[in-house]
Image (cartoon, rainbow, N blue to C red; front, side, top):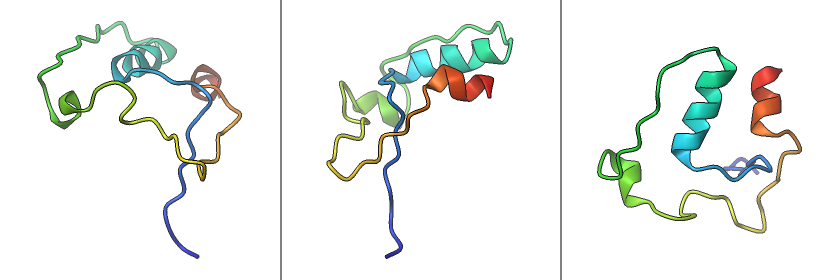
Length: 69
């Protein structure tokens, strides 16, 4: 009954692009630099972090809309 529920949004974005979108929505002019060799997520490539299970509940709200909310 209690467990983990995947609730991804309808957008599929690379992590660096998500950072750029989030900073822009907040009026932050910092630059996002992609370093493929940094951190634990560097080992995850392609769609490894995308919720693709049949049990995922896809949210209707797009990332940019949610950030504007």
